[in-house]
Image 1: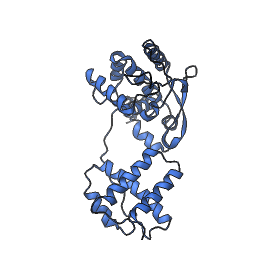
Image 2 (image 1 turned 30 degrees about the horizontal axis):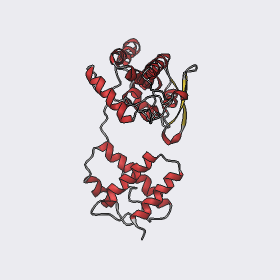
Image 3 (image 1 turned 120 degrees about the horizontal axis):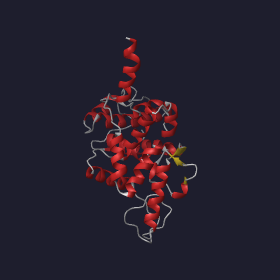
Image 4 (image 1 turned 90 degrees about the horizontal axis):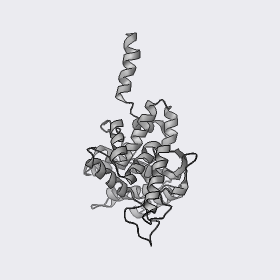
Length: 288
């Protein structure tokens, strides 16, 4: 009988060969260890559907987190079954975990206006890049100035699964980025890195502002100016919603966001309620 370590490592190696990101592989590993390695350990080779359901019932997380674990284990056991390392797939009868449908609101135009007016120069440059391009924060922190074409207002990112994607940004974002770069160079901070930490040392010119660093500064400046829930991913949702409201076809928004599945894009792009109301009054109500 194969050991837990052997089965887990065989799966993780296969995902590495498929080109999955280190973050994705780390999540698979954490999930498998959480369910099967914690005391009392469960044998992966002989576990049953009941064993997994029992362990799931003892995990302290919400339905969204639990369904993430379920998806990871479904991929794990599908691999083991297809490779004939196990005779039965215990995840085959564990179905998608129902999640509450919560409408995650984009920023209002007034909130974005306040950010443009009140935030610090670096934060305004970050906000303008995120709101005009719709990129992920993980993509943002990897950018250099040399990556951006300031004439065509485009740049290339490598998104999930290292998929290459062309993105666009606004002239307003370009102007703020130039202003930010000029201001920091006046302080002796010379680097091609797009967003630097507040404290840059001469012997570390290539240090980057991290994801948590951006999250922290945006949250802090948002609270200071009376805006709740200022976090990077919300700009991506706002980009999708505004693009949909402006009449951009959903499939084009999908390409801009780097989504494989258009259903993912539809969850992001929340049609503005005012637009729905206007459509109802001008079209549907008149036909009744």
